[in-house]
Amino acid sequence: MADLSIEFAGIKAPNPFWLASAPPTDKQYNVERAFEAGWGGVVWKTLGEDPAAVNVSSRYSASYDAHGDVVGFNNIELITDRPLEVNLREIEDTKRNWPDRALIVSLMVPCEEDAWKRIVKQVEQTGADGVELNFGCPHGMPERGMGAAVGQVPEYVEMVTRWCKQYSSLPVMVKMTPNVTDVRHPARAAFRGGADAVSLINTVNSITGLDLDRMVARPIVGSQSTHGGMCGPAVKPIALNMLAEIARDPETAGKRLCGIGGISNWRDAAEFIALGAGSVQVCTAAMLHGFRIVEGMKDGLSRWMDEKGYARIEDFRGLAVPNTTDWKYLDINYKSIAQIDQDKCINCGRCHIACEDTSHQAINKLLQADGSNIYTVNDDECVGCNLCEITCPVDQCITMVPQETGLPYMNWTQDPRNPYREA
Image (cartoon, rainbow, N blue to C red):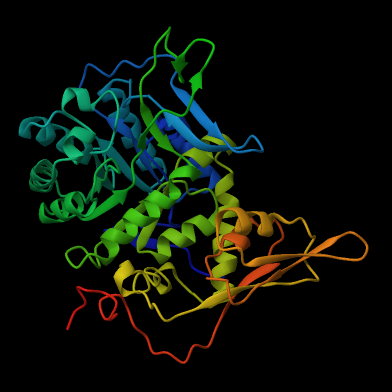
């Protein structure tokens, strides 16, 4: 059996599956139940100064797919609304009861040196394993000069990170906001400030939908609403891209990264790890399905690792990073075309409709004597765009087959058709 244990930024955990800072980690009762279920660690819901934050009702909304499953989970909840002293006491008790689990504490206080000095020292006294600086909250707190208001300014990120490293011996993780043009700049700033790791992504600014009868967005508070932060499967592609950008940036390559964003199963986790994450955080999936989902995550990842011959997480961490590059370095001479397995084809015609209406008219519709249709690929017209493969409802019915062109590797920087090609 594969060994799922990790050491991340000096923090040990029996597995890489941690609960993200959110309602599931708001109190000792929840966190200890999570540990009983098998989670390797938690990031305690964000602590702030007293008086505690005041939340509104309601707080959540969602986007759904055609089957009614939640794909995007939106919230306008703030940081903990429980007193700081209560949280600190429960953190200390929980760590004492579960010494083998990773317990990180998320923090957010005003952008003042004394405020950060006080709270990191208080957290250190609890015996917690590390702190995560919440520079990502996109609603409520930025209006107070915190959360994303800090995360969007690299100079602030570096400054606060340096304060926390100065006044505490705990490992410091910095949680990145996705609501920026280029996530590499705040990530670089975090590491310049001495961060031991960055975690990403926090939630994405969003309005998930409206009540068209009341003409107000959801979630509805009285007769009003506001933008919130979206998480869940819908943000996974954004998270993977931002993780890869940091993992392959020369200034941050090789640094410790914690992956967050739409992780719902073991495969999601494996993808984040392959792009450089040393641990992963989960929130939405646990809120929708409960803490026991970690059993399947651990079992699935372990079985896959055994199948691939990976003994430890580090054996495949970051293996996909070298294969992720800028568009201009992709091989222009590489060619693939679609191939339809007629034994698997159910003749639904979706590939033909998609290609005929919106692509390159490369799928032939052939009428048979019995009145049915079969679909074939016009190799000369196919550009290998993958649209037919994506629209096909049958797994592995349409595949993209590499073609031998006889041409060497050539990218856009070398292409004679590029007026700005490199010499």
